[in-house]
Length: 169
Image (tube, one colour):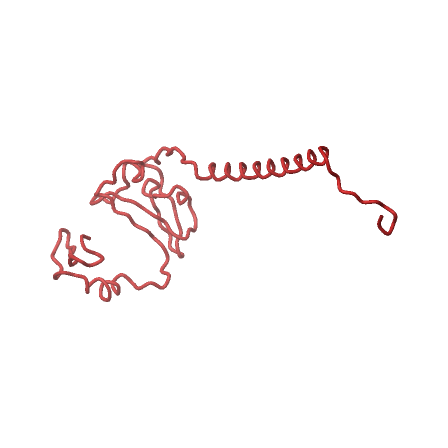
């Protein structure tokens, strides 16, 4: 007996075993339900969605503001569906056909092999990176193989040396 005169005894026998078994079963089943719900959410979030129809080529241009500048972009040229909304955005990813500089007839990531006539453009605010002209002078010229050669429409083509990170570009 203890101080208050109550006898404490531990349960033993088949009743106690059944009660402990039920408690363990409820705990395990609760864990399995929580794990199944979590796995179900992950599967739902990562499940591939069927590609939606591409926007019509004659759809009105979307006004998108990036770093205070407004760009009127055709919806078919916008690569990421979430970016096909007007208003301010952090950045925008575009794709055009080369040399026409028109939006492609089909989505570039529709499962087909990528065409080599695609030009990918990202418009984003300058985050302190060097300007393109400065990058050309300080980084790319040390990898150049020869002097620039003239290309059509007044452009210049610069080949990179073999064995550099930019070879073949």
